[in-house]
Structures are given as C-alpha cells and as structure tokens.
Amino acid sequence: TTIMLASALMGGSELPVTAINEVQNSPIIEYHLSPEKLHKAGQLYHAWITLYIANAAFNILLLLIMLKFRLGVTFRNWVEQVSPRKLIQVFSFTPLLLGTIGLFNLPLQAFRHHFMSHYELSLQSWSSWLLDYIKLGIAGITIGILFVGLFYVFVRISPKRWWFYGWLISAMIIIFLVFIKPVFIDPLFNKFD
Image (cartoon, rainbow, N blue to C red; front, side, top):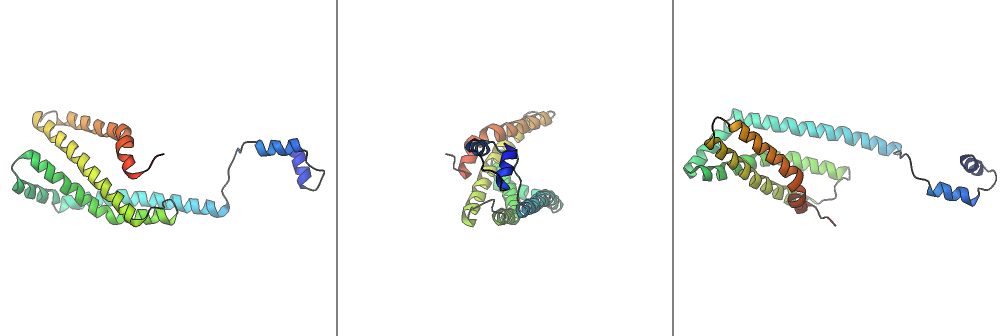
C-alpha cells in the first residue's frame, strides 16, 4: 500500500479506493512538532524549570530571612498579647505566618501567571487569577490552622513522642492532598463537566 501511495503521489497510476481508505483509517503512530513549535516547547521547558527552581530558592530564602529577623518571635509576642489561651494563639499565629509567606510569594506567583498567559497555557484573567489566589490562601490557612493545632495538641500530650505525631500529621496531609483535595478543593478553582 505504501508503494502504491508513493507511486500515486509521484504521478504514477491512480490510487485505488481501498488504499485511500487504509491511509485515512490508519492510526497515527508518531507526532512531530513543527520546528517553530519545537523551539517554543524547548523555551517553555527551560523557562518552567528555571521558574520552579527560582520559586523553591525564593521560599527557602524567605524562610531564612524570617528566621534571621525573628519574625516568628514577633508574631508569637503579638499573639501572646492577644490571648493567654494556646488554642487562640494557634488560631492567630498560623494565619499571620502563612499570610506573610503568601504575601511575599504574590509577586512570584503573579509572574508565573504572566508566564502561563504568555505561553498560552492559561486564558484566565488577572481578576479571576487573583480571586483564585485569595481562595487558595484562605483554604491553605484554614487547613494550616487545623494541622498546626493538632500538632501542638500532640506536643502537649506527649512531649517525648511529638516526632511520631508530627509524622502522623504529615501522613494525614499527604492523604488529604491525594484523596480529599480533588473532591473538595479543586472544584473551587475548576469547572468539571
């Protein structure tokens, strides 16, 4: 069939109808990008890896700066002035810490959205993106309060085995991310039909 197709394309005899049907119905085995799309895909890959590494480095640097300037101690002092009750302190400290991290991450995440829009990977408007960023922050703070509160309860109950309970909470977070997030969190940001 391939020889008959090549012969017909080179000006040979006409191609039989069965050969045309075979060519039209044959599955595509390989797909190749055009050179310009391949170049754009390569640029996208390198830019994405660079952005990923920059995000990780920025977050590590941010946490180190927060440690250096004792921001956690400042937050703790503020929270202790609000209430002597540990539960209220957890409910106050966690949003302060996670909100600060989210606020400092806003410019990098905005650049990420710009990047995604530039490469036509996202059609989301800036207002919609910002609303999603705020919803994600609220969900993260809510979940953070729950897990940090549980961790401190376990530290008070068993100061010698806090590491085991920390591991247990980490396992719960992983289970949450794998099983619960797709059902309850993802629909806040995506429409599934």
